Length: 80
Image (cartoon, rainbow, N blue to C red; front, top):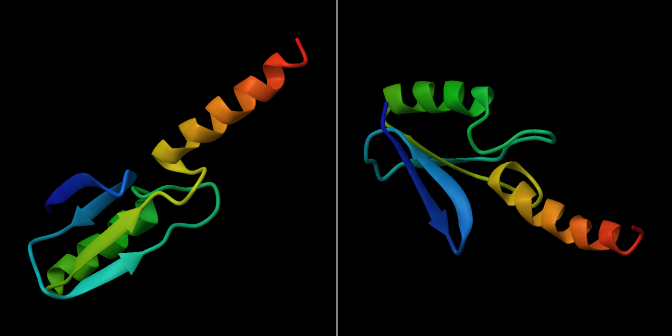
């Protein structure tokens, strides 16, 4: 299955499956990310039915977790 990794307005995203005009938007849960196993399973099934799946990292998840670490590293430095 095709997996196209890209960014939408600097938000990490994945477009799963063959090109289609039919798209599902998959939103991951807490403690997860855009490439979660559940999203991959949904994407495989959707691809078989002619759909693509778009998933992305919510704030403070996946690749966007780095922003949280950077943000709080400055806060921690104030206490050292």
